[in-house]
Length: 127
Image (cartoon, rainbow, N blue to C red; front, top):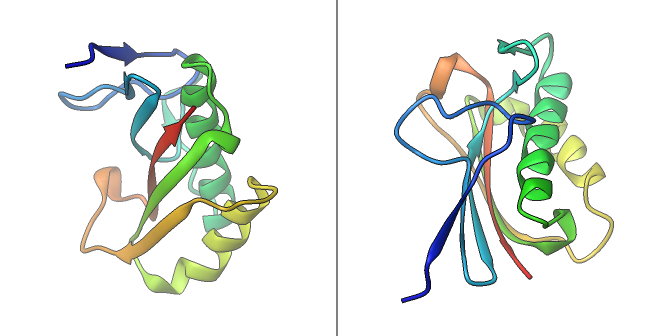
């Protein structure tokens, strides 16, 4: 079995449970779900769903960067929403971070998310 490498950066929120920000196995990178915590101040950025989603994507980008990856390497994403009423705004922000060859994805509404946020996104990247 290929050794796994734990990815950690201070430029993304620290784990709020027993998990890693990301785990690399071979050329695959598995990112844990990110929420809208600003890592510099440790506070949620939830003024509106657009800003919240931008913060999530910035956190994801920081973890990818720490592992030597970027958004062009993302093959699969999962988006969790507190309500499907947020779908269009989240989708618009999410799409702005990708230029072409969008990753595979599912988006689901769930009963609750950590810290009562409105959006959480996880990803799988491959080099």
